[in-house]
Length: 287
Image (cartoon, rainbow, N blue to C red; front, top):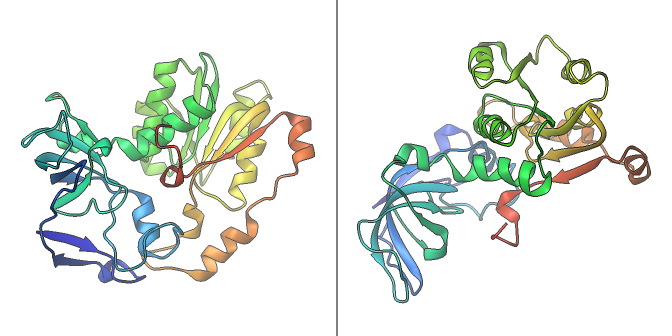
C-alpha cells in the first residue's frame, strides 16, 4: 500500500508518498481500506513543526478517514469485511489502509457518503465539545466564532441553529461573506469591522455568551472582551502562528509572546470562564 509521510519539518515540497506493508489487525482491531481522509489545519501545523503533540518524524498524518473494513481481528464483534465505516485514526489517516482499534470505528449508514463522513469527527467533535459539553449552549444564547467559513465555523453555525442560538457572529475574509451569511451567521469582515464592537452593538452592549477563538495571540483577549459577564471563551487553535507555506519562527514567537495571561481575580469579578481545548489530548475519549 501507499501512505503519506512527513519526513521532517518543512513546506509542501517536503511531503512524501511511500510504499509500506499492508497492515494486519491485532486482537480487537480492524483494518480499513481508506476511501477518503479528512484534512485539517492541525495537519499543516504538524508539517511546520508547530503542533507540539504529533509523533516524532517521520510519521503519517491524518486524524480522520472513511472507508470499508478489510478484515476484523480476534475478538471484534459487530464489524466485518465490507462494512462502510468512519475511522477516528488519531494519526495515520493519509494511507490507503490502516489498522486501528475497533472502538475507534463507527459503522456508516448508506445515507452518508465517504466525503461527508471524513469531514465529521474533528470539526463537529470540536464544536460540539466546546459549545455543548463545556458550554451547555442554551436556546436564545449568542455566539462569536472566528474563521467562520472553516470546518469548525461551519459546524458551530449548524449546532447553534439546532440548539436555538439567537445570534451567531462570524468573522472571515470578504470573499467568504456569501457562504457565511448563507448559514444564517452575521458576517464580520475581519479587515474592516471590529468584531468586539459588533458583538456589543448586537447584544445591547452586553456581549456574547460564547466566543470561539482558533487564532491565538493578542486576538484571544479581544475575544474575551467580546463576552458578556458570565460568558465563556474557548481557545482551540493558533492560526496566528502560521504565515505562509513554511515555518516562520518569528511569527510563531510573536503569537506566543502576545498570548494573554488571565488574572483569576478579574475573571472571578466578571464571572467569565476560559477553556483551552485540544481534542487530540483528551484523556477521556468518551468525552
